[in-house]
Image (cartoon, rainbow, N blue to C red; front, side):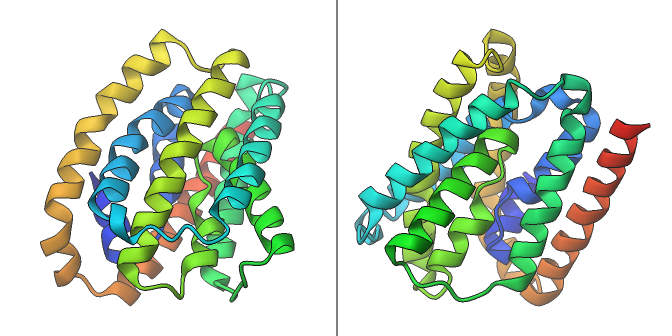
Length: 225
């Protein structure tokens, strides 16, 4: 619920704050259950703005994204479970740095290649792929950005779950945990608009980046110790 509300108010991916906090509860929530649950939010975003989806360069971007997903799924199968927290924490810090910098990126083939593969890889490893793709659409009208990213995340989530299943990281237990997270996403989506209007976007964004960073550092430290 908190992740959905903060995404609506700051524009940052909900996974940025959910991943380190959930991983501190249990590493089993990341990435499979989180990716499954987030499909409720991305699906609603895509359906709500289906007429606003920007299809320019989308097939190419999705192709690169799926390549990154496969690479990420192959990599996560090689990460020992007891060290997964380090990987999650480091990727959260990378995503925070990208979100804080917010460089302007043009949607050409080299940029789509880098952004697509990086986002797919990070999504499969940790469930956080949004910050990189958000850079490609940050200057589009908000409704276009929400709808397009929702559509991309929904399709990439399906690919991630399939790849994680074959990598041995997504089964019935992860499915049950993911479904248990869905109500929070849905409730957050419903209550987010009035709360988002009441929040100061700049301060909320800064708070998300700080909380995400501190949570990631604690997660890394706990995994190492």
